[in-house]
Length: 484
Image (cartoon, rainbow, N blue to C red; front, side, top):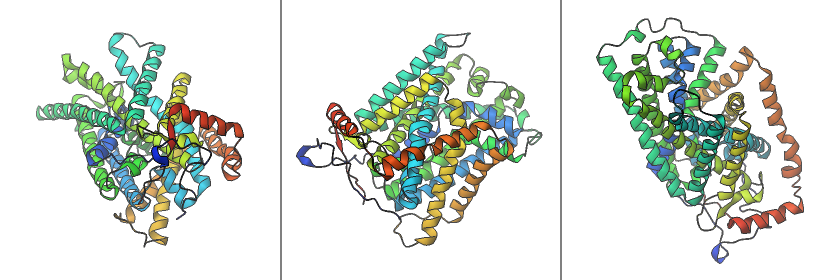
């Protein structure tokens, strides 16, 4: 396993910390906050919107439920595999740091370049716009909300998230805990409503439940993408390993609690949808949860719209929290500008990285052309998931004596790797599209930046002066690792 060459940011930066000591992010994420970070990020707008698309591709209620269960099982297996990696490589950064330590600098830079510049900001912008749509909808009854209002609300959401996450890690985790509790309560309302309907005998959707099932390979792959969008965030805790209290215990425990909990809730919520609606009604609903609320809750249906808004805000907080850490860790390793690797001297948060992430998300919101980007980058995301899992298999086979507090059976990462290969290749082979080529070309464009800036360390002098001025203006200083 490759080790780091340096332990701190560039010597050209000024140390603003007291007594000349380096700063480090605090370990303030415990088990409850860890579960909230995983579950709170996973439960966004997906479970309220994606069921109709999973049903559309799978063709029947029973196969749709099987797809949701398969997505939950895959997310659980992936998270358990990542938990072992997190106890071997006890550093924050998720896939980035694992690829860096196992495969080296170049593939790690390509991942960081793709994730920080485009994928993470686009995903955050998508979730914030989803929040904005539901938040402003009550003010425009009977008509669609103006795009400028939606975009301004989404930008305000990102601004609020930036302030919260820059002020204090504990504050960000408190917000995550509160919103996770709220969205779990909302899902429980849907589950209980469905159970009541089933008790009253509304089981029409479950008669001949497999009729119309579509078993085409490419179609199943697209259905997986739709389902896995609702499970996105299963790997979030690995991005903040250095901020976990007792990570050897907290990481695997949080995974084993959060993902099965979310999977069971998703299955029960889908059962509730089918109890309230026929498959044809569900396919034409547009917003499944809202339609369910109108049919079951009647005058209280507005609670569902409110729940979706709260859910997406909490999910965007988790996406923002972890996405900023990837930028911070990549900068600390020399793959991004030095200023992004620094932390605020009093708040002890990676504020420059968070500000950069929010700036990129603002650009995505203004352009408005991010939805297709997120869709087409799904296969790139699973490519890097597969690379990370193959790194775990390499360590298990070639370096079995490395100390690890938690071990996953080797069959589990093998299953995840096979699924990753399938998810990357199936849509390309079954339905090749020119946009996928554009995505690959963007990823490969990182080569143009890697060799002069990282490999040969060409840094213009004016960038060093800019770094110093920004460091003084933002009151930030270089950080040190706190890794055992």
